[in-house]
Length: 114
Length: 114
Image (cartoon, rainbow over all chains, first blue to last red; front, side, top):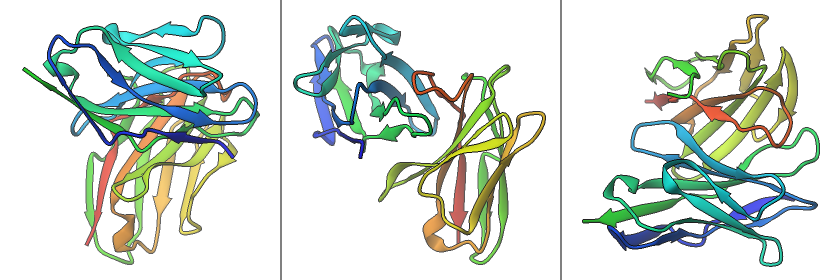
């Protein structure tokens, strides 16, 4: 069965510092991996995805993520955090098999202090 | 703005009642997904439709049902409501049901069962 783990409930970082939000997954075969962000009282906004190809994926708002097959990880990164990046971040995985669903991690709250 | 619309934004009702949540997908998207977000269960996939047909089913209770209409909008019906059904219900859409397709989320309907 496919699953996603976000080991940190909360990540705190100072503005201007690099940030990393961790995600590990378990899925049979080659996974499709996604990152979404949720601001208070808003829906989920798509940030980026990995389907195949280059392990480093660039997304919206300066975010990027690195796919590491050997470590089954897909960590979200940003070189310089902004206060406005403070939000709830979700990693999600989907098995390529037909009829499978997008499985979300529990989410990580990112707090960027000024 | 993702282009996915959901109505109503908020819904307050009593136990035992029935409600209907509505979703309009992005223009051109044929696939609709429903998710439930609660504090204890996180984000859970409920059900998927593609061009009017049920495509995949997740942790959807028997008291819940959904359908997708010829104009591609979808409705999620929740009946015999219980306190535990209080949650944020999201609709998402994608062009096709393939795993690599990005799902774009609506703003959600916040349901409170009293």
